[in-house]
Image 1 (cartoon, rainbow, N blue to C red):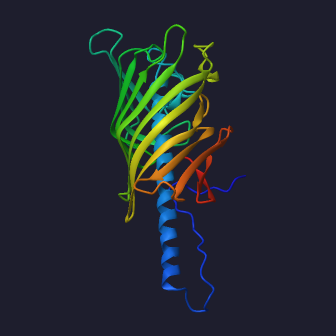
Image 2 (tube, rainbow, N blue to C red; image 1 turned 90 degrees about the vertical axis):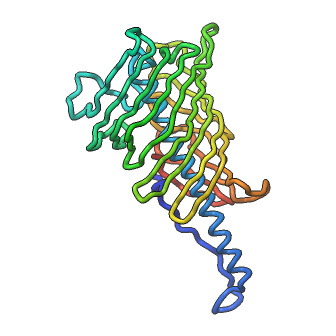
Image 3 (spheres, helix red, strand yellow; image 1 turned 180 degrees about the vertical axis):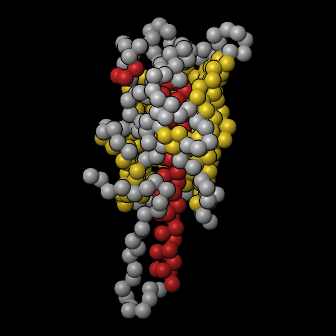
Length: 303
């Protein structure tokens, strides 16, 4: 069993102190140690915040795709394993479908998780409303889905911004390629800490195209970049991230199972060692990942 460190907690960092005298290091060495601690902490917070935002907004993609067969491929995200025959306790959200033009599309789907907290199949508690407007079924080239939020929380993290999916694939030969954008995303915690995030990703289905009505075998490759800013207490850090090894997601797994993201704080010199590399593992479906900074690797738990 891997040791777990909650994503929002800072690991205890060991500093190497000078042993020249019994009483203290020189001012220069102490300042270097303090600077190293600050740099490592800032890099770790940047990497963790990018991972947290990636996880929450990837879930929004799954929810938009999985609302129903009429708009996507039913059964992903919060809809995984749920049917209308489940008890009211098991299905603790309501779905409202609106056709503003009295035609199949455009269509507006509002998922209301209530105000007291709705447990999801992934173990997270949600409340508030997620609203998605579709121009067509998302399996068709050119289809667009835009998601916004009304008082929406995931485990007491307030989610704001706009999530946009555009099918940029082709009909013949059939390919499923999505452009997924997060525009002015913001995640705010009860203590006032927050993450601001803008993301631009390309999501390509690499397995399961031969079984369009059996999404359980679908596997997706994610490529792209993001920029963000995080506030943790008195620390305020801006960063940018790039996927250096494509992220791999399975339809049946809530978490990314493989791939790497390189996160760099803004305004750092190109040869700086204070770069965070997030590694999602070797393909197992679990909530574990590692962050490596300046040769130090830390285990984290994904949201």
